[in-house]
Amino acid sequence: MAVSEETIRKIAHLARLELTEKEVQTYSKQLTGILDYVSQLSKVDTTGVEPLVTATDMAVNFREDKVEPSLSPDDLLSNAPDRSGNLFKVPPVL
Image (cartoon, rainbow, N blue to C red):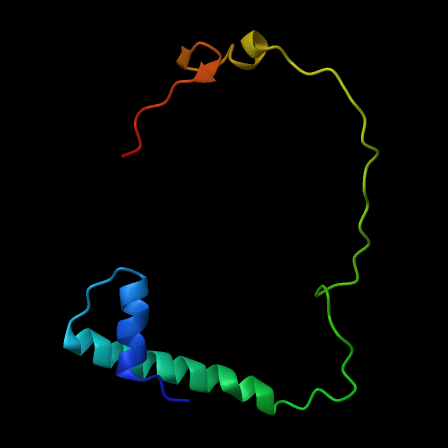
């Protein structure tokens, strides 16, 4: 399945990306290769294979939903290095 350069340009436009012509050609080839590789899955014979929900036979064990007392904001923040009111104060990330 070949992905045209026009399709790559449209995807780039929708994603608000500016691509050079070389990038358009490269991504067209790469995406075509990826889709060709994935299309091989349709050739696998899955006759008689049961659908798989999980990789292991696991039972889901739900706990009873109980309301329990929780800690106060002061207790929760007692070991915080810095706080602002009832919030953790951390250094800026960006």
